[in-house]
Image (cartoon, rainbow, N blue to C red):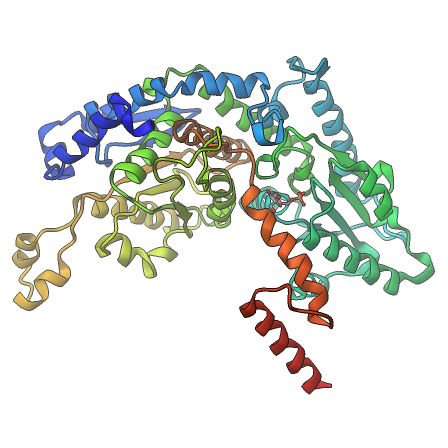
Length: 539
Ligand code: F6P
């Protein structure tokens, strides 16, 4: 049992012994704390000094990683072993960014050459769109790209587009449709001209109900608007592992970009699923993005665990989740371009590690993934930071900020930087009652103004947001996901928990119009009846 391990017990004891431990005294006692708890990876600075740890905690966490054979697990993933055991698949998103000169054979096939063959086709296609050579059915250049996908087939593309908007070709416009709610597609179509719109249908399986429904609606919209002139090959591309279903949908094979079952949906933004990103930032920008991913892969596998930021971030999340009972973790980018980064990470971390069963099928013994959430700073400061500072729960925070701005507009960036530094400082050191009173605060207000402090955060400062830095940051969290899963002993690469809801929805859909509802649970059946009676009263 995980909880029987000597390292686990030592961490529990250490946690108890730290009840009175404060960051204030830790900093006061050790003038070298910042340098001792700061690391650099791929040019990104990580300050871990404001965490509720001392060197003993760090060592115990590293010992836990050793006992859980994390290093062996990492090697197994990179080698292409079938570590996704419930689906009998390799987990090889790291192969998507290997240089062309590398070789990685899986079942006798060099997957690196396959990856680069698809990349070459994507580049030709992306360049045709960017140059205006790719024209719609009526001969006008495509200028509007609508990515239709959901989950990993949406969150990566939309996050990357928003993050790298400053690097995008501005005469092209982009929309991302994911929700089966017709409002999503309807709004995307408002600003789309059928003659100049390309739909990219992104779906690993090409069976996902939301995506197939949206893709069919797009096809009808085009057919209605363009009539006899409509040519599918001028308005549709597909990104999928399922060539058969793509062909059945009627997407011409030269517009199809494949990938492989060893790329998980939530780890696929640097596969063919990144076609919209490549069209936006161009093939060379996409190469930079891939280089960033690869930088972090190399760092992760070669840097010793003791000084490896991936290990430390993953182990800190274990420390807070399992020894402090923290239920959530905030990711707060002080970089407006990263506004969808927390949403992207939610799928990556929670679909991977929100599990209650271990790889061997036995129930997990400890809590697994916390809830990840976040919004860009400084907006969050005027909203939920109150809870971060004075709420009853401790929420560990990752602060992300570029040292240089993408846009240098007067004083903006200094204000942004000073705010992120202030938030991290106030969380850590707070303000006690004596200090509040010393400001001349009215006595009855003192308790309201006390800031408890001792609230942990990592300050992640990168030089400036760019495709390469984005790749590094995404790969950082991908590998944190892996290390967490290895410690907890869970399978991070399947997602069985999302399946039952799909099956039940399929069973409910026909009952909304007519038929027997007796197979539904009573509450659902009552809701269906209410919908039906509302509908008949509207006729
Ligand atoms: O339902 C969950 C899920 O399978 C995700 O893991 C995946 O990213 C998403 O659906 C979309 O799947 P697909 O790319 O096959 O449409």
